[in-house]
Every structure is written in C-alpha cells, then in structure tokens.
Length: 235
Length: 235
Image (cartoon, rainbow over all chains, first blue to last red; front, side, top):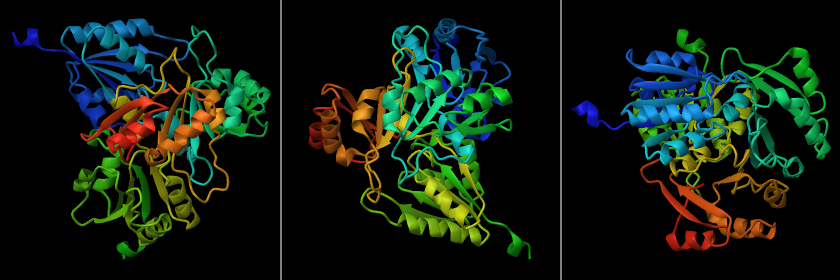
C-alpha cells in the first residue's frame, strides 16, 4: 500500500570531472539512496559502489561516437522510472547544466509533470585547467571566461558561435568536447583574426590519474593532436 | 624532531556556492585535517564544525566594502603558516580559480617555494542559476556561456570587457559580483547594442536558504534592484 502511493523523484546530479574527491556530499548521498542510477561514460565508475546493492544501475553511454542510448531514450527512461515511484539518480559527468544536456532532461521531466531536483557539480571546464595549473581567471589579467562547445547540435539551424566576436572579446576561452574538430575550429578562429601564436592547452581525462595535457599554439595544435593521437574526452 | 622537519602544505579549496551539500568530499576531508583554516565571508560557516578542535580558524573577510584582510595580507598569512610546517586550508566561496583570486594566492605560494594544492569547487556562477531553474547552456539554444566580473581590479590599465564584442557574441552571460554597479553595466551594454528587453535574472545568496531571485530586463533591472534593496552577494 505504502509502496503504491510512493512518489518518485529524479535527481539530475553532477558527478564532477572524474576525481572521486571532487564529487559533492549531496551527490554521494543521492547515490547512497538511489533505487535507479542512470550513469554516463564520464562519471567515475567507482561511484557505483556507493549505491545500495538492490539499486538498478543503467549505463547510458555516451562515448563519443558510441551512444548507447539516445538522448530521447534517456529522457523517456528517466520519466518512466520516476513515474514508477522510484528514487532515480541521473549521474552526469561534470555539471548537469554546463553542456551536460541536463536542461533537456529537466524539460522532459517537467513536461511529464514529474518532480526533479538539480544537484550542480564541479565542471571539468574549470577543474581540468586547475589541475593542469591554469587558472581560468586571474584578477589583473582577465575579467571574463567563455565556455563553448566544439560539438554543436547538428540540428541547430545556425552555428551559434560567432568566432569573430569571440576573437574581439578575448579573455580565457575554454572549449569542451571538440578535440576531434580541433583543426576546423582552429582554422575558423585564425580566419576570424585570432593570433596564430595564441597559447592553447588541451587536457584529456581531466582530474583523473589518466590526465594528460598537450600544449601548443592555435596554429600547430591540430598537428600535435594528430601526432600524439590525443583523443576525447578532452577540453 | 618529527615536528621540526614536517613540511607544511597549503590547500586552496573551493567551498562551493553556499549549500553545504555542494561541498566536495575532498574539501570536507581537507577541513577535517586542517591545522589552520583561513576562510571567507561566502563560505558556509558550518564547515568550521568539521575542523579539529585544535585548528586555528582565521576569518579573512571579504564582505563587499569591508575587507578584513587585504589580498596581500592573506597571501602573506598563507605563506607564513605553511612555512611554519602547518597543514593550511584556504577556504574560498565557490571555485578558487573562477573569479576567486586563487590564482594570486597560488602565485604567492609558488613564488615562496611552498607546496600547494588546488581543490576546485562548485561555482555559484553555475549553481546559482541552476537553483533558480536556469540552465546556463541548453543544447539547441546556445553553445556558449561567458562569465565576467562586474567588479574589476581598479588597478588594471584597460577595462578588459569589450561589451560590444560580448553583445555580438550573445549566448548566456553571467556576471559575478556586480550588483552595486548594475546600473552602469546595463547602460554600457545597451549602448553597445544589446537589446533593452533582454531578460535578466539576479540571484543573491545562491543555493542557500536565503536565496532570492529578481527578474527583469536589461532596461529595468537597475530600477528593480534599487526598489527591492537587492544587495550583494549576487550574480
């Protein structure tokens, strides 16, 4: 009887950038009380040990180029499990709302009239550079930082990034998920007037023991990526 | 003897945006092992309960307009305590490297040849909007977000923010620490061609039980701030 009337709830949880120590207290607590955990490729898989033995663990993908579930399938899965009255934890690498597609999941849950909570996480866009010794802002040096995706929605009608404006704006610029498009993006930035010797740092597997950093300039970074076979996940 | 040769270390730790649940596991662990904690106005003060009873707790300020210690004094304090062989935890609201002035502290420690570690935190710039129901990015809607400070270093020679370029760039824009300058900044943005009916949300005491949100447009936000006496800390 109690079972039948129990309300489900979905927690959209940032799992942090990879280092288990950068998981938040609330994220850990959510996993410890989960009945269903839907997790990503970029989440530290050790987090699953915190889940109750009875919890259902569902791998949602998405290694670049190898989506296990589509975004629509994930949205439907979260809604279905929540509607069944489950405590559902959707674990997402980094932060759910900074290029995490958490907005789409929140929208799907809201549209279905289901309760959800967003638990922000430490973004790899900030922590990755920090672990490589690069502060994204420095008072006296720059007053702004722009985070952009190198992996835009292919269905979007206009390429939303105005590289000429970005070049004029300056400041720190952090690109997420664009390593496989780095050549095209660097060319576009140079064509928009960005200086060729602009320092560029690529960081893969940020904050984990597999972290690697590759340094170059806007002009030579694509070549170095190819030479080192430097692949995703990178910023 | 062991006491004398012990190496000190300084941890520059992001305390998260305010909600105790958004503190990372490593941040908690750092406080639990601290011999000295140097903390800010914006840190959740309940974190101090995690410190050992023997730990020295030092309040560094900085409520807007009421700096308790200057940045130079904080830098010197961290270096001194670390040089004494202490386990020093520098707790900073949000993330130390996203407008946290952690870069300056790291530089001062590095210049003094002292070991330090950066522990990234959840930034209020991302978590604040999330708690107000605003995703900073939404695939299909925008591909970039710019974080800028409304509170630039007065000693910087050029105002680093090119509002015209920012206007052209578009995307989500999050200003930190600018509530007392909102009128001037909104005027400068409109003069740079940003549309007057651009939706603006201000969030103060983000993620805490005191969180308040104020909604307006670029044209009327300054008036609303004045009418509501909406003060710092806000984004």
